[in-house]
Image 1 (cartoon, rainbow, N blue to C red):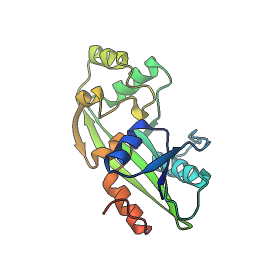
Image 2: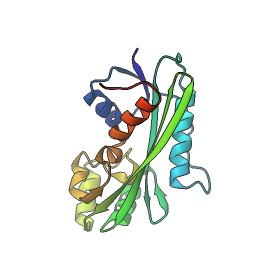
Image 3: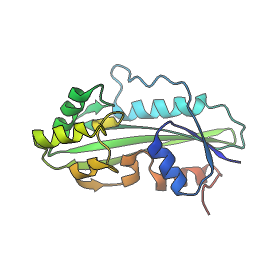
Length: 188
């Protein structure tokens, strides 16, 4: 039986496909708006759990949902609303370390389990010219924190401490462990 991936993220699709896992993409209708006072970890956890709960599937099918956000100095950076918002976010990440949180929620056999993975990412110092160049690539749009590590945004990153695939949007090693824990290994 295939796996259901409750995500429209091409990066999550690519990471799952790289494992050789057969899957179908479903896009549950879930409100992803961060609630007032909701911290980064509570936010991504709620959204991932809401996504997996909204997926209709038989108990014998593994459903996977995830949500990722960026946190810097206690502030949550969601997806930028426009180029100016992307510039603001990139300035806040310049020459500092931020945290990327991804919550995964899996459902199989009538059980739901979830986990949050956090990775520390340190940016190089960004000049206004570099920020303008990167925003002009169009890559920041649709990305939490306004960057994509796996793309041109990799040039902005000095160091990653933790799961690289977490920063891309799906912490693969932890996903495999979580699926196995639910009794539905994805590989092997």
